[in-house]
Figure 1 (cartoon, one colour):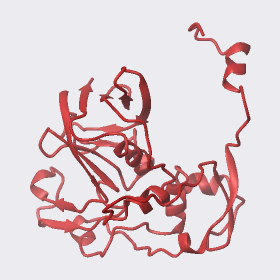
Figure 2 (cartoon, rainbow, N blue to C red; figure 1 turned 90 degrees about the vertical axis):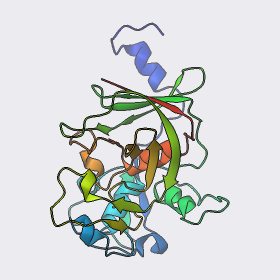
Figure 3 (tube, rainbow, N blue to C red; figure 1 turned 135 degrees about the horizontal axis):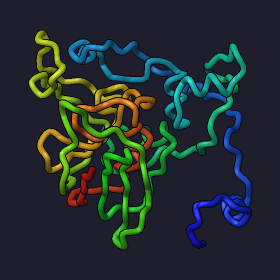
Figure 4 (cartoon, rainbow, N blue to C red; figure 1 turned 45 degrees about the horizontal axis):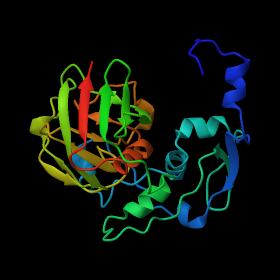
Length: 261
């Protein structure tokens, strides 16, 4: 179709062509999904290091990430007083189920993580990425330079600006431990000590770390999806956990990444 910039009848018909799909639906929360465990997550990273895992804080937060939204949105689309628990029925965005993926040597439960976030194991494969700071977007292209995915991101800050230029993905760590070094954080407390934090969606890098050829920099998830595109980061590229795991299934070592203003 020619680009006109106008939302006319022809454009509307093209967008609505085919079977209409719902935007929300009702689900009954399974007992296994509701079981947890859940932990209160302290603010300090040294305190977080004392936890056996950086899980969801509660079932509402877990349910929100499963359906690619926030707890506040779930509360807004359900009747006042709606409770969450095993067997209860709630309205959620229409994000379909994914089976627990069978992955050889999956010692970190990545197949379960994909299912918990409603993300398919099989994704189109990336040839290169472009992170655009002004647009607040990470764009994924195939070998023919066709755009195959696009994600909102948070990129850098005044203290840790996005490193412009050409970089390369060195590897992907799924459900990673986080090795906290306060020397690398300008806002770390003088009392902080080096520590190792266990994996989980509420860890500092969420559920995945995509390592870059720029030392100490990566593309990763976040414990606070509502901040994506709204707050600054420590120089890295942050996505929601559900977008980060999808991207992790699209990339591999050697994929090029261009960071531009």
